[in-house]
Structure formats: C-alpha cells, structure tokens
Image (cartoon, rainbow, N blue to C red; front, side, top):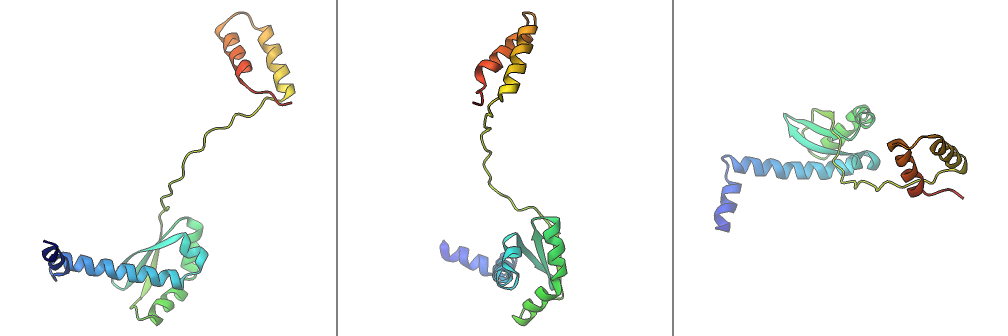
Amino acid sequence: MQKSLENYLEADDGAGKILAHARLLIKLARLYQEIAPANLARASRLVNYKSKIIVIHAASGALAAKLRQIAPTLRDGFSKRGVECNGLEVKVQVLETRAQSRASTQKPLTRRASVALESLRDALPTSPLRAALETFLRRTPRAE
C-alpha cells in the first residue's frame, strides 16, 4: 500500500505535479531564509512560486513596504542561486500567532478614589446602585 501511495504521489499526472511544486516551495523557502535579512525573514514567509514570480506574505504593511524596497536584491539573490525569478510579489498577510489571553489583573484603588467612592456610597439612598457600589468596594483591593 505504501509503495502504491508513493507511486501515486510521484506520478506525472495530478498529484505528482503538486508534490513537485511542494518540494520546490520548501527549497525556495529555505533559500529565502538565507537571502532575506534575518529580521525580515522571521516576520514573513515565501508562499508561492508561479510564472517565475515569487510570492511573499509579510506580517504587516510596514514590513511589506520594506520587502518591496529590497525586492531587486532578493530577486538577484534567487537568480544567483539558480532560481528563475522575474520578480517578487509581496502581500500583507498577518501570521497566525497562538497568543494566549492574559488574565486581567485587578488594580488597587488609590486612597483618594476609595474615599470618593465611599462618600458617594454614603450619599446614595438604599438602591441596587448602592448595593453594587458596596460590593465593588468590598471586593476591590486598596493601595496602601
């Protein structure tokens, strides 16, 4: 079974072309990491190669502008390494990050804010607003 799958993936019709293109993209991505300045290469990635045009996704507009400025240098770098490259196309595509949301931190009330809220509470008649304010004052830490 494994041999037939391998034969299918390497065949010239259909899947073979996809596999060959994927291998080419891996090779070009490695070359891009070598050619591009390190800080720019970390925030961008080579995503396609079509009609002798290399397509790069940048993480921000500013990065895309910088990559467009150095596009001739990058194109020459690819050409010197044997890649037929007539140009670069740079698009803005924010890289996915797996940033975890941070838990909110409760900031303590300053002495001045605490006194102001307590006097407001004392001035209010018995009501849901006063009860909410009392709960807030009871739960909120105070700065010392």
